Length: 123
Image (cartoon, rainbow, N blue to C red; front, side, top):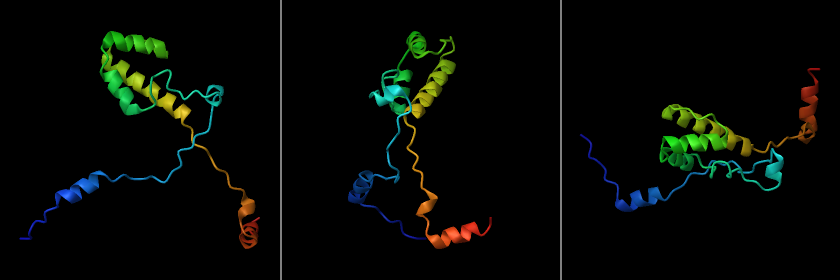
């Protein structure tokens, strides 16, 4: 039977301090006139963080949820779980409309002449 290895407390603490980078740029292009004027989209829901909004919705009672739904533009219904899911769905749509990623378009002229010659052979 193999002996178990013990990890030191120092190694565990150093692992907790690590963060992972995804390599994507966090640049977003404006899609509405309000975004061009400087609106960040947090005025309707109070935040653009999904975890914070979910906690905010979970802390509300049914009457608060119905009032919030009517201010956001959703028809308030009596079923709490359905209303919560609708609010979260609309929140995700709102966030995705404000965070449209920038598309970089590369021109085909940036290819070298030999590659262009090979690609033009199939015409």
